[in-house]
Amino acid sequence: MKQHFVYLLAFTFITCLILSCDKDDEVDKEPVNPDTEQVEPKEEEEDSTEEENEEENEELVVADPNRATESIILDNMKVHSGTPPRPGTGKTGDMVDIKMNRDTIFWTEGITQRLMIKSPENTELKGFWIYVTGADSYLEATFREEESSTILEGEEPEDIDVFYFDFDPTGWDLPFNFPIEFIPFDHDDNPVDTKEGPVVGEGPHDPSPKTGSLPKSYYTTGAWDWIESKDTSIDFYAAPNYTFQTEGTTFGCCDDGVSSQDPNCNNFIELSYTNYYTINMELFNLFESYTFQGISIETTRNFDPGISDFCTLYDGYNYDEKKSYFAGDWEVNADGHLVLTFTKRDPFVYIGSLYKPISDHFMEEVNLGGPDGGGQLRRVYERLTNANSPEWYD
Image (tube, rainbow, N blue to C red; front, side, top):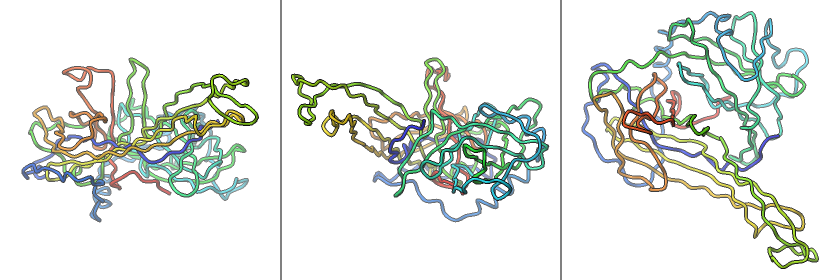
């Protein structure tokens, strides 16, 4: 059963990445201090992003659809022959406006993509099909029910469903791409919407020997979005919209229909509650001026006995949103790692300072547990190619 709570906004975190570049892509401006005023990450100007993406995709090898289907990894996956049902053909459930948090699924070895879809409240999706265009079969899989939630971003609540996408790289040469259809279905196995987009498999980053070099796309095309934190040594995991729950029990009274927390009452009542803490997002921008800036927002839901009712067993809660802004300077060290120096930062928020590239769209924080990055915690970020902040795509 889905956890219903109010999602007040995204937890945005400011961090950055380093990748190598050719001489033509090198930054040659002197570092300058960022504006110390609180400011949202800059809106992306209309530029040649789509044209640049087309140029990148021209270099990709279009994968064999049947082989690609065999290499996709999903939760509780089943393989069906033929092509999947689509909305408007045969028996179809009520059409639903489904949105996804990515319009392109980027992937590289070592990365498992955590993808989210948003739908009107109580849509109650059962699962989804993925079809690689031209393949002889399609895949069926399920969402992570324990990570599903209900959020309130606008006037009406909306459901969030989460699924994980991975790929078996055995025998593959990177980079490659292939088009897919994503088709969610209801509890009667009827398709309710369809999304189309590419999967792009990226090769590993080729580190540059030149200190201070950085591919231009990293500071001119899109923001960097935190996608997960994981520590396998203590079974810790965090990701956007992933909710940490704390359950508890308190005691109060109900005397003659009046609720109170008087410990000396005649009718002692036990009331259970569940607190929530959510990290919904971490976001940062790099700029050509050798500066960076970002914003972080975290949300909490805490039990409040003062607005609870021990007579009706109503558990009341307070909701809180904390927003913080970050800014500073960046540089690249001799190892090709991005180094962040903070000039503006709220003290209660942790953020690392050293990051290494994984591929064109991914980077990870290093140096978390020892001088050589030997700690168990791994924090991963993805570059948003078509946006300067996370978006929902039709």
